[in-house]
Image (cartoon, rainbow, N blue to C red; front, side, top):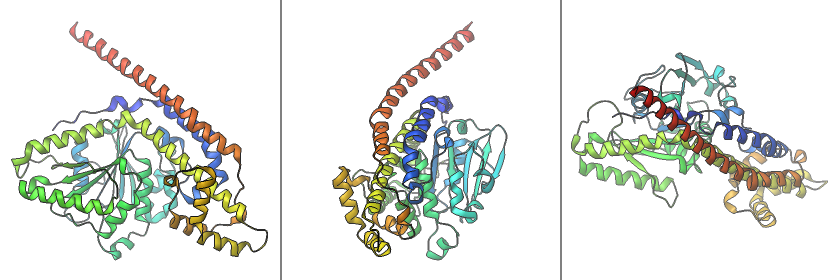
Length: 415
């Protein structure tokens, strides 16, 4: 099936993305640095985080067809590509466009400022030795980058043998990508403990998630209905959202269907998925804006929490009070919620926050700096709104320019 390439959208909204970066540096980063946001949640963003192409993250248990899916999507093979029924992909492989074919090891890729991977250094050498950045001259990758992940295994021993926090790495990528595709094999629907943990680690990114029931041509219609129902039931136990997740049914590779009685359904589903992916360059800046707003709201709450903890700290008996504050952190959350009229949905996970606070020096926390919070409110209420208008204007201008260029080319061809 042919897949239309969306490379014309790769430069769309570029100036808006640059303005987002400027807003972050001037109005959000100072608050993050004041209240040590990076230690608790996510390291500071870089220019590459705003300028990079849209990214798609592929997840799934081993032998669900992730690597084959990528090869089918970009219509070629690529370096570091390994396919087999056993767990073959044991590394995170980022596929990006390049003028010439090039493979960059993890330790090299994370120090290259052209790419948004500098903050991956915090996961250590055990991870970086399992991370590669592959550049190839490919038209599809000219607008969208793809991240292939290791096949998710079953069993505690296999999980520990990775040598790095697999779920934390997935969470890092999930916060930065534009689309997350979760692949399942129609013959292998069991959700292992590690897969369950991996899905939970990307919580709060459900709007980016799409589910693919792959290799569906290898079962009949009646069995496919049962498999689909079982998959939805299993996902419902892990992803607690009121919305039903979108599941694409098909067989995403270049070979003929084994069982073609549902071929029209598979082709329609594949077309829907390709359209979903093709729209990413168009909505990339909207996604970056949305992620920046979510980050700003979390940073605001975090700042209020840290300032409140600092305020509660006495002159004497600091260690005892620190333990008490950590134990009663939920009460601190409620106090911040009441005092600053903040929604409960903006607060971080209590248990995770407690675990990090144990190793922190409360005496180095900063008191409330109202000016920083006022500046952040100004960004959310005024600057982002202005950017939304600018984005629509640039979109209309870009679309008109592309149409004019295509019309002129058509006239030249006719003449």
